Length: 235
Image (tube, rainbow, N blue to C red):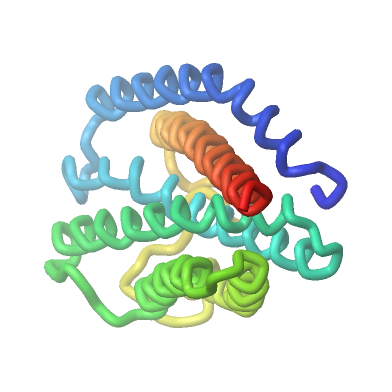
């Protein structure tokens, strides 16, 4: 990543973005079709279908922050503008994903547990992750020079990596209302094949949408910096 220039990565991402969005729309359309015709859960009824939005966005909110943390480490060690820009581009996407997780989780929790919110380990650690995302974005826009902003935000991202295993393993380490993992678990997935296939189609559809979104944000940041340099040179 540190050997790739921001311009070359931006050009590559934009060149494939039209194919990425088409694939995303196809997968999301397929997932909607599968979700509609999927039989309701015996215990939860139709409310369990929230899972096909909640779980993929939860996976992505964790994965995005992991990439941000790794990019921040690379940026600080190798002084890589590409790595810093990757982290900067992913931050708003991660925030949106974590908000979707919290909102869908609250709705699902109310339908299942009879409460929109409880202060258990999984929900609380997920809320902390959302606030870390928000703090990362605020730091990025709290400094006049983007190099200082990237440095400060990178420190927060690296510290925030500590929260990821807490979110992931909270249901194993503590007693919580949140159910244990049904897919990424020892012994393999515990859900039926039709549920698993629908979940994976939904995940890859949202994942492709995330790639498309990232490509455009990355491109906008690079073009904005080009304009700022041009203005400075002209002055």
